[in-house]
Length: 225
Length: 225
Image 1 (cartoon, rainbow over the protein chains, first blue to last red):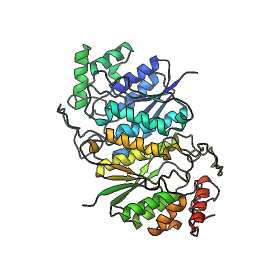
Image 2: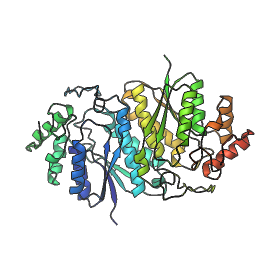
Image 3: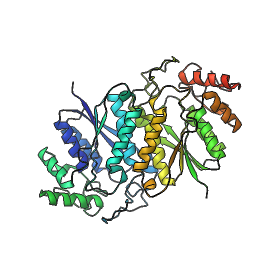
Image 4: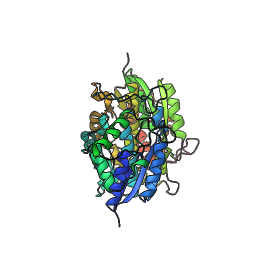
């Protein structure tokens, strides 16, 4: 029987590369996306499209609107504008409180239900926006949490958080994805994409992505508006 | 300015005692309940009632139906019956995958938004149902996760998980609550309460609660059907 993997799939460049990687390892893939009231839904459409392309056994879209209702982030609060890229070391206003913690918690629950061996998450510590929940120590702490609290693990099974992009630059991730046949035209990274999935080209996420294609010497297929 | 506390409030005996305790410490209380598709809603009504009684600044009810949709637990899956108390050491079928992990993740996010100092959770390691996410090592691992991943904490603030009932027996919790003026008639612990909040008297949770009143030498005010 194939081993199973949960893949956290936003529909962006990194998570789609993660999905392609897991699929290439002959794992049975279950993708998981979150509708947390983010302003743009284009990324959810791309998550669905790539789940089909990579033969995911199931694409689970979790309604997390309550997380958006908490407010406090430019990604979900209609009263806060998406800022342009600044390149300083501050934790930006686009940080959603406890977002990766909540995402992993659901993935963890889902992994117990389907008896998965792995949870893949496409976080990167290299070209990243400065979110504290993208750092290696966060994932170590989360793995420790799973080891102490999972019924499934305490019964003798293994459940491992996989962060294959953690130490890759954006350019390296893009090269990996190209090798795996990812079509980056069908991914949306922009924090402020419109309903057609067209990117702004100016936010943190667009800036890092654009530079990644440049550094990788790959033509940027992004659909800019 | 008063320090703030998030109280995870199911509407049961333990979480209501926690709320009364936090309120007695002159904290500004924010209560948080979860609608995760549990079969009975009576406990949510009691959570609302006690939030008002203890002057919570806000009672936040989070829609977590997606968690219920994951299935795998007798508390949320209509195809699995609630079992009667067995008293063995097995992790029971009423365990909801990653439930406390998800609950704490939301509380953590909410705490960052309102700038809370504490998160109160009424878990007990003494008279408990054997869930792995009620053990001390789980809360230590979760505190460690917060310390490594919270923007708010990394900026120099403190955010602490409080488990004041962790080493109390059910009888000790009841005595504490009585001293604090808790009316246990207005709490629902039963895993299988009906829509009027009437308890079955037979499940794990009813059995532990019933014994608690007996051991505490307090008349059991529970509304049995």
